[in-house]
Image 1 (cartoon, rainbow, N blue to C red):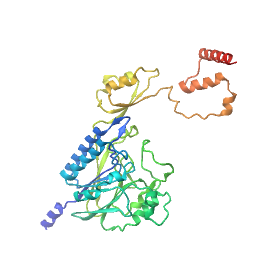
Image 2: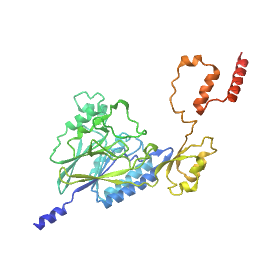
Image 3: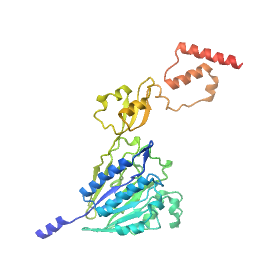
Image 4: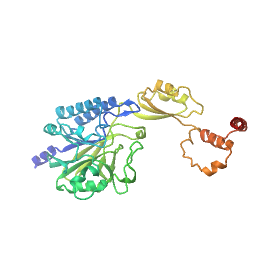
Length: 398
């Protein structure tokens, strides 16, 4: 009857926000990003209030380095205070490869009474926290960043250095009730068969794919909350996602659109994911062209002059105090590059054949060097000058 319809409408389910790779304390080209991080956290808190989020998952790399600066610790402290004390939501944190397991794990037993769950070390079993909503139990499994060498003592088999096998064994050990809703938090390089996540040049991962962990290891879970790769993306299936970073943390990320996934999980099998865009205090972008164009008011007046800038200057002739001129307009210019016909070839690797070098005269060798530096051949007048210098030097040394 109507009463049942009303009850069904009243059903409240668990809305979950997934973050990762906060990198508090990040410094880029000597510029601290703490103000930008503080700003984006306020944006995230507004989203949590507005969307009535009940649980927050943070999948590793809370800090940018194992010994974080004081202001980074204070930033996390204030963020957690608002979430736990003021908003009364449950917060789940696992360690990433940038975090110190011991520092991040400090006080975790005490915090659990407040609804803050931190798992920074694997101790032989996955930490499991059982939440309840109108649709029944919802289990959060917490798997901090592991290396096979750190967990091999918990297994009889030899894990060698096989990350995929290590994760497989860790999950195999758990008795997962597949009739319930299960979420796992993980911070590893998760791939899907031959499909690797899109990553940037700033993310240095080991060669040869030894760190790969296949997403099929997590098939018992309704959602896989992954950290480690900076571009937000799904891997293998819609419900296995890298949250991505909350800000752009290198110039190789300038084309990323940062977003955060909200997981709306109703009854088993009924899960929707909404990606909400994040707008930073300062964007990170590239400007390129002759310096006289870059400093023309009509070309910059529309943009935010406070943005973090990588400036590429394309003038052929040297520019006096290029960085000073650019910084006058964009005070947060962090990088300056020159790109012109002289530099275009300087990045290409040269294969030097020693036998060929031995056959060449000094003039030929210098001509090759000049062309490599300037992308131009010596003209006749320059050749004469070089010839004279070579003969003078030879004359002096004989």
